[in-house]
Image (tube, rainbow, N blue to C red; front, side, top):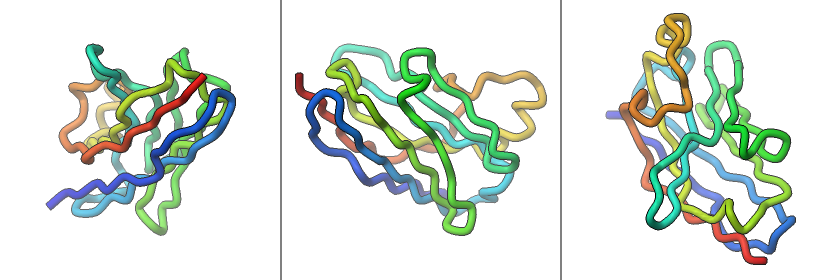
Length: 131
């Protein structure tokens, strides 16, 4: 049974930082893609960052490049999202997602920032950035 448990959300002022964590279990971690998505009220869920756990390749949405960093601790089956220079428009519910076949799909040219590529989702953690 795949489980994704997120933590680390909260409220910060613009310019501040937060670090999200996602602990994964129930599948072969080392060949997967894991992604962070976010959804603001009234908006579609969008991909923010992703990582191929087998090789460490990372992918970012243009809106967060240079501000957010996705990383992993393979020994703990955990993925992190370090968010710096936060802006009010970063306010959203943030979700961790896992695609156990992500490694294979990357080789086939799939985009790991596309929501429909992912099979498993965490419960979400709220990030609120005030101006």
